Length: 402
Image 1 (spheres, helix red, strand yellow):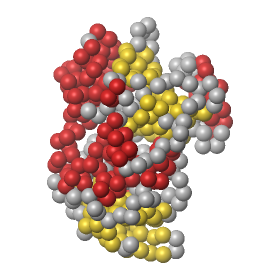
Image 2 (image 1 turned 180 degrees about the vertical axis):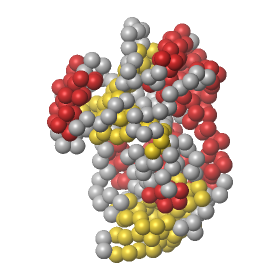
Image 3 (image 1 turned 120 degrees about the vertical axis):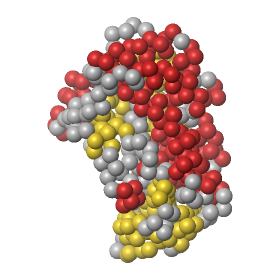
Image 4 (image 1 turned 90 degrees about the horizontal axis):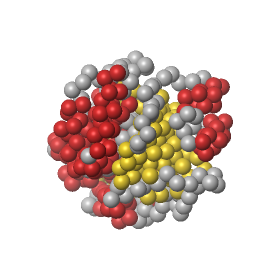
């Protein structure tokens, strides 16, 4: 179809969720994605119960043995014998799955819906404020038009760049991501986050049967291709559990076994303009260590569909998430800051969480992108009063980090 009620650019999990949400309301949806095949990224996703309930309603079938339910998050602080353990209550236990498996399942769920058409291999040449799109697919130029055009095409969003250019993104670190698979790779339903005084961190979580997702975050330059294995051993072997050394070393030796990305944050401001709206990481994002972005993206689509148009979405959505976004960013800055001031603030935050059950509960809800996390506001306001170094080693603010 050349015309639709809604055109969605980007067929990742957030784009698919947005398509389902509009189709639920009877809209005819056309989805366009640049990729010509399956979406592959060796990174882990965390989805909390409200999003999981939506997926169940849409008939999303996850691959057996390739997902897990999280029990909580444990933070290990360098040099401190007592970790901080956050436990999710039964009603807040998240689904943990690899991005690739999630994207495949979400796209498969669209097939039975006659209201949705998905086109692969579409390159966007231009977008207009009247909701029209000029694109190429194969050898053919095509013009599409809709009442609403939705950019769901991630951090390097073509739709956002066509409208606003390269909006600033603060890059704070590099992250090496891998999905490790093999007999004996069990446990980690309790997500483990390990930090040290140099700004390095490790995030480990179960993704299924004998399947583990690992994210390694470091504030340094990208190593040369032939130095990756030695670099990982030097930087992270002391932080990683020994049973993950060999599987990670194998992944580093494989082509595309590890993906390096520049990580940081972009403030969520570019929600809509004209007949165009954006959802998920196309709007903005925080560091994946905090893990709220997938839940935020699903909720973007829900609120946009509630309005049915771009006008008003840009007011309603920030009102719903402003405090959570601020808290998530502040939480990350305090956890990973490298200045003496932020190191001291981190000690204060973790000590407060150790002794205060109410603070631990609020932190747990923050990680779930739930408004009950706002109970942390007084503490984070106090900690954010210090001078925090936001400068990075990649030139400060950049427009397109990945």
